[in-house]
Length: 264
Image (cartoon, rainbow, N blue to C red):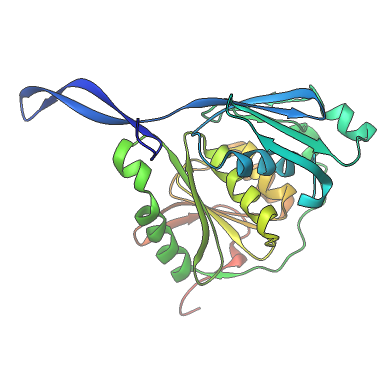
């Protein structure tokens, strides 16, 4: 086993009309169970790296906490358990237990708030704008960061960026896990997200859109496609979706004014 979240497996491969036995790097996958205030909350299937960030980001994305100061304890155990304790155990938190939707995301994605409820949410009011050239440049840079993907082809990438640079970057077998790790990193570093945006490698589905809305992130860029529901939610919540950001192309699906076009 390597310390790079991949393992070598003996395989039979066909290359150039020749069968060969080789050792091939395969991405690791592990269950991580979050225990919140002594109760089992959820088990996430993930790339076993930065588990504390994943746990923190998951709690923030799903509305259990707002800042790192809402927690009195976080402890990552070797047996795939993460113990977390809130400073206060409100009735609202109790109601969230069990109110979940199994999502379309790889890695057994789960969201704890009702999609229909989210349609009633207030639209985001920020005025973030980003140059199209910056989106093109940073989307290309996302690829250069993706070392685990280059080795295994088995993970999604997620980055938090501003107009100038990629600030944080994570890879995981689940695209929602990669986003949650970004969020956890921001919590630990007390980095605000409202004036920044996501760059993703995977498709933009409703659970990703809802995470962004809860985090007040106004722009999501991906190399892949959005779903119809994510576009509907983005339109209602005043979030800009950019898909197929590859090379010199991109599709803007909602709220085009956030992307500044050259020579306009």
